[in-house]
Image (cartoon, rainbow, N blue to C red; front, side, top):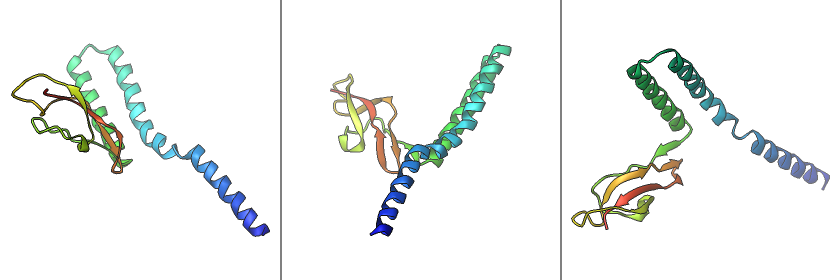
Length: 128
C-alpha cells in the first residue's frame, strides 16, 4: 500500500513539473526568431532602405514558419473559388457576389492546426 502511495505522489509531482516546464521546448525554438526580430528592429533604426527591411522580414517570417512546422503547427489550406464547407475548418464571414454564391472568395484570417487538431479556424469570405 505504501509503494502505491509513493507511486501516486511521484506521478503527481511529475505531472506538475510537465505542466510548469511543458512550454520550454516551444520557447527555446522561438527564441532565435525573437533574436532575429530584435536585430531587424535595431537595423531598421540605422537604415532607410525599405527593400532591405522587407527582405529581412520575409526571411524572419520564413524562419518562424519553419520553427512552427517543426513544433507541429501547420496552416490550414484555404482554396479560393471552391464551395464553402464548414468541415474544412473554415468559419463563415459574409462575402459579396451573386455568381460566387457559396464559394470562398478570400481568406480573412489564416487557420492553423497542431498535429491534426485545429487550434484556430480559418475565417474566409464566402459569397452569399
